[in-house]
Image 1 (tube, rainbow over the protein chains, first blue to last red):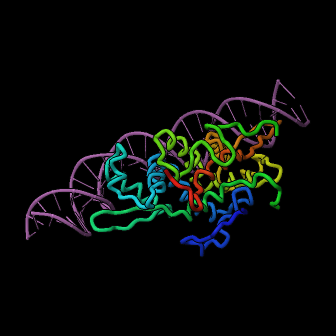
Image 2: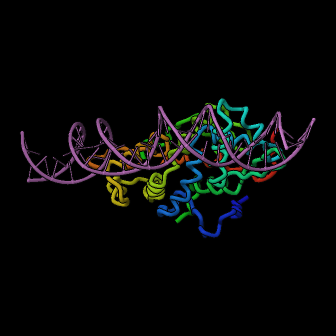
Image 3: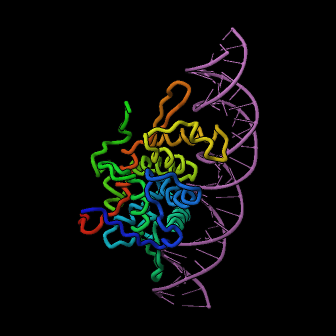
Length: 126
Length: 126
DNA sequence: GGCTTGCATTGATGTCTGTCGATACAAGTT
DNA sequence: AACTTGTATCGACAGACATCAATGCAAGCC
């Protein structure tokens, strides 16, 4: 199985070859600024836990009411972190009646993973 | 390349690393705190550019004297960012005569990539 | 020794960020 | 319409962070 990177992504129009990979070439300022946003969102333990709780959910969706009680933090704080994750393109949400459900956006996660992955083994690059 | 791959955290297997993956199971507080460190280090455009400049270098090493002039920032600021990247386990350095050389630590990068990568399909989550 | 260059550390400063309580908004229930 | 519950927003505040100038330290050179 070779790598089959589907490039579906909500915002794949602005960055043509979004990120060929960390080790492929130096990033320019714009690329770095765009990539820093999701990584910054991942750079907080609470948000990492939130994201993992959401992404590991079987049905793919989690109600906020299931997330908030898992932390020793106030409800506004959790809501704030969810907002940052959403603004980073890592999750999205929808209100359904009284409750709001969040789900992960695998395209963004895989894009970041592909960016970080170093071309270990084989010397096909360059 | 004398010393490389100083395992920072847990044990880096091959593709699976310490943390089984974002979508596999919710992180506990300790795992989240440990993972947040490198992601936080990646959450700055300057550090992303620095890391990409280092990781994409053919010989695997870059002299600080080649990094500093690429930014409109003071030399202490660049030094500060390099220190943060090093503390995050993303790079390491060595003084060699007058100059200091930095190189990337692929083990950490691949570990983060493996953590972010979502299961393509299947992957029955128990 | 003294001088020069390369890089790290220190101390200061303005900005950003995580957190909270209070409040507003949305939707269901009575 | 009132009440209750779930979630988001607002305003404020302490701590963290990015940045700089000044300084210190290491190593080569006069």
